[in-house]
Image 1: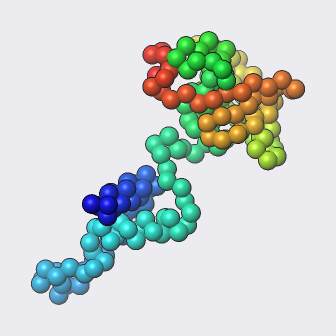
Image 2 (image 1 turned 30 degrees about the horizontal axis):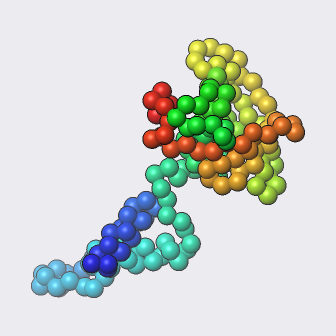
Length: 175
């Protein structure tokens, strides 16, 4: 039973990382006789492809793992110490892979100017309105990424820490 569970887990890993199991075509004689080669079984194909993924050291991807400017989970972040279920507008940031949008900004785009350790010096350009026409403005920030689910946003010497909030914990208006 454990080997079946392992096989299912490896197939899920392959699907999440975008790999497809290796398939081999059988020689015409095998096709006619119905004999199967050992490499043709879906399980062995999946295992060998999964082994190649694991050998390369690629981590398993989750549905939330998407490319982005910063190594952060995509979704909503709230200021540390603030309840995910009832955050005030000023305590909310949404990372979409392009920028950190606030309650009154949209279409934010981050350009990384420099990186030192886990701190990114960036310029962020946003439209200064939640909706409707508005000017685009830019500001320079330092963003210290502690891990994929937490960061500190620094403007000058002042900093504010944020943490990721899963959709299930957010108020209905943010889900």
